[in-house]
Structure formats: C-alpha cells, structure tokens
Length: 160
Image 1: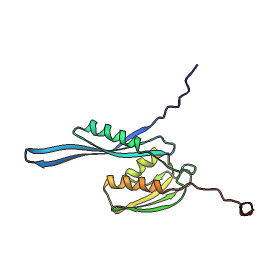
Image 2: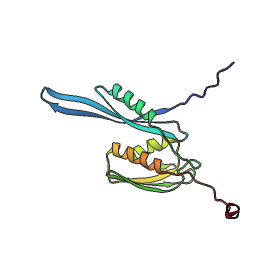
Image 3: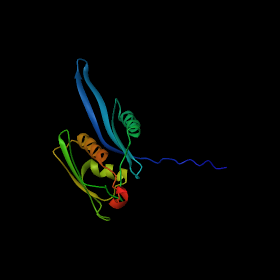
Image 4: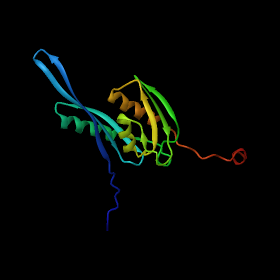
C-alpha cells in the first residue's frame, strides 16, 4: 500500500540581505534583514522580510513568513490575464501580458517573483523607486489585483 501524498515543492530565492546598524549608548547594535521569495512555479508565490541577529536566522524567519503569506496568481497560458497599472508607496508598476516565446521583459526583483509564480511571458516597467523591498511588495500587490480571464458568454442563453 503506497501512501499517496502530494508533496508541495517550493523553490526559495533570497532577494536581498541588508546589514542594519543602530547607535546605542553601549556602541553599535547590528542586525540583519533578509527579503525572501518562495513559489511553486504553478501560480503560488509569497514574499516576506525577516530580521535577526545573524544572516541564517533572518533567512529562516523570512522563509517561514513567506510560506504563510503565499498568494495564488491567476495565469492565462504562461502569462498574466490582463494589463495592470498600480501605484504602491513610492513606486508605480505597469504589467502587460506577452505572447508565447517572449520571455520576461521586466527587471529587478519582479523577474524573480514572476519566475517563481510560473509566469514565463510578460513585460512591464517599475517606475519611481529603486528600493528592492518596496518594489517587491509593489509586484505582489499588482499580482493580488489580477483577475481570472473569463470566456465570452453567449448573451442569448444568459437572458433566458
């Protein structure tokens, strides 16, 4: 008897590691923050920021948070279902679906997030911010706003 259990295989990528120092009366207080993205390549992706006194501790915390805060991204073939324009904090993002074979024509952390989500063809631009943390949450907010693409409905049947 084989136990049929579907194991969820999540791919993990570290987007940024920052060294944060704080001046205190006893000297400097040093911590690390890690920005991590996880995804299954089939429409689920999550990002999180973890902080700790050491880098591995910060990464571990971020991974746990990212797995808890995963979102489901609607896909149409291997691209996004429709265009989107969104402003979040200091950044603005434009995303467009692209035909098969185009690839990801978007830079920075968006490329990594799209790859983890399973989006292989899309184009876009991030304007206004070069901060990777803000841009990461900007991309996630844009992906949350996407709606599933519906097939056209025959109006005669729906009126009856």
